Image (cartoon, rainbow, N blue to C red; front, side, top):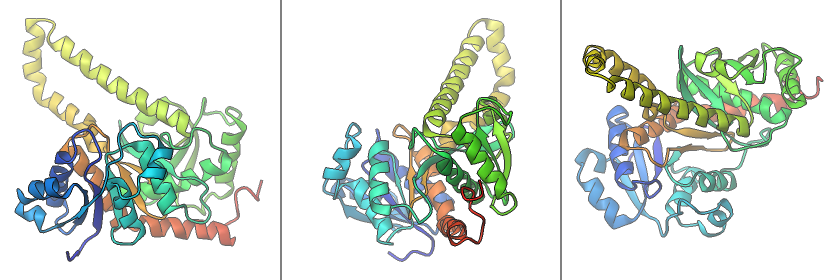
Amino acid sequence: MVANGPTIALDAMGGDKAPEIVIRGAAIALERFPDVRFLVFGAGETLTKLVAKDKVLSEAVELREASSVISADAKPSQALRNGKGSSMWSALEAVKQGEAQAAVSAGNTGALMAISKFLLRTPTGIDRPAMASILPTSKGETVMLDLGANLECDADNLFQFAILGALFARASLAIETPTVGLLNVGAEELKGSDQIKTAAAMLRNLEGQLPLKFEGFIEGDDIISGKVDVVVTDGFSGNVALKTAEGTARLFGHFMRRTFRSSPMAAIGYLFARSALKRLRNHLDPRKYNGAVFLGLNGIAVKSHGGSDAFGFANAVGVAVDMSRYGFLGSVRAEFERLQTGELRSGSESL
């Protein structure tokens, strides 16, 4: 298989509707990125039949047999002990070995994080990886991290997440100098825990030297208003905020459907508003924002939602392609090397 563009390793067996949605998702992604190539890991005979249905895709895919599949309910510790040779492990190992520039899986989130950390490790200067994703806002899109990888974070973690999030926004949203805010219980400088206040001081002490513009503290309603390009928080708060936003979107859709079905006049109103509502639905379509990334590793690992369809999986592949093409890993190494070598004043040393 000759690759002109990046090679993406796919865990074909992860997710609720695998492997069908993985293969169809790869085909959709290939339409957007014709030079991308895929290493696909899973049950060979099943995958061969699925890939053979699409001649264009078959020319861009190399299939590799995987001996097992990590179940959706497997604990991270079990995945580490017994997962070697599985489709998920093999996809991540391809990234470690340099055969692929990124891996995408819709499988078990905890297992994917554990195996990613074990195989890919963190670069010098990064203590923990963080899970990041792109969310829709009233102004466009914003990056948010951490979304659940680290339930408790100290000031150094939040400081590192701010840099990682800014570099991710550069690669995925094409924002040269992203604005960054720390999620807090209030915008006032005196509010919040010691950890978040210390992280803010660290970012201010390096103002103008980092690939970001620090805007200070933001509150929960600032997330969807698009006040900043990157929202930084610990994994506990981030996961709660994300699930709340997802639930609110579903509730909004439920109320809209119930309202338009409430009377004949409401149904007529729907006919007049149908095109506008379609645009709204497309803007809020969660499949467009599918693809959470484990930032802070020596490799790119993207988590697709387990229940996603082919369109959503294709968007997760798109996130992996963007990060590969726009040098995300090189940027991370360069920025944290500057901190480690003393080219920048260390935020923690300056306090």
